[in-house]
Structure formats: C-alpha cells, structure tokens
Amino acid sequence: MASFDIVSKVDIQQLDNAINTVKKEVSTRYDFKGSHVEIDFNKKDLKLVIEAENEMKMGQILDVLITRSMRQNVDPKCYDMDKEAYGSGKILKKDISIRNGIPLDIIKKINKSIKDSGLKVQTAIMDDLIRVTAKKIDDLQAVIQLCKTNDFGVPLQYINMK
Image (cartoon, rainbow, N blue to C red; front, side, top):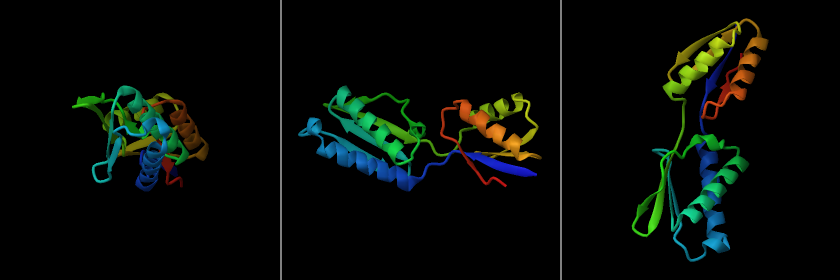
C-alpha cells in the first residue's frame, strides 16, 4: 500500500531569513528614513510584531514581508493576518501569528473534500497531519492535485511518499 502525509510546517530558519531581509530592506529604504519601524520575531511563540507610524507604512512593510517570504520559499499563507492593527500612542502595532500545523477544522475540510472526490483512498487523521493510503500511486497523485486546486487557507506540504 502506497501512502503519504499531508502536513503544514514552516521552516523556521527560512522564515527568520525572510524577516531579517525585510528588516534590512526597510532600514535602507528612503521612504522609511527617520520614521519609527520595528519588526520583532519571537521564534519560541512563532509571533511577529510589526510597529509603524501609520497605515500606509504598515501596508508597505506587509507587502515587503510577503514578497521577501516568497523569495525565501516561505508560503505567505503561513502568516495569520486576521487581527487588525491597533494603536499604541502615536504608533500602530500589528500582531501576526505564524501558522505551523493544520488546525482541526481545516483537517476536517481536507478530509471531507478527499472523501467527496470518490477516489479509492483511505485517510487517517493523526494529530496535525493526514495520512492518505491507496493501492495505486496514481490515486495518491490525484489527491495531491485535488488539495492543490482547493484553497484551504494554510500552506500544505506532501511528505513521506512511499
């Protein structure tokens, strides 16, 4: 029986490299000269805190963060930007949490979409990953294509193909 695992993991080192290049680019850009910009990344809690003077600069920082992440092969879907920026005195702060692992509600959506596809595969939920097994590798590849065409809101990786 052939199998593989569907996971959502972020390479912390590549993420740290992307954030460091964002810091470097923001410090050298002319439009940020003399303005308050601070980017803090907590590796332990996987939280990113961005401080800027106004909404426009916050948006520019987020754009740079997404483009630099894509260049470092970090999927921008790993950033949970649902929380709005909040004011703290004269500056704006935005808390961004890093998604590492698949939440249970998204695991159920993925599992339901695989079951509804009619492919002859079996799925097993194991903590924050889904193991998919089938007799034919072609069925497993069809499941991978199905997951790539659907947007579940988290970056998915397919590992341990046996």
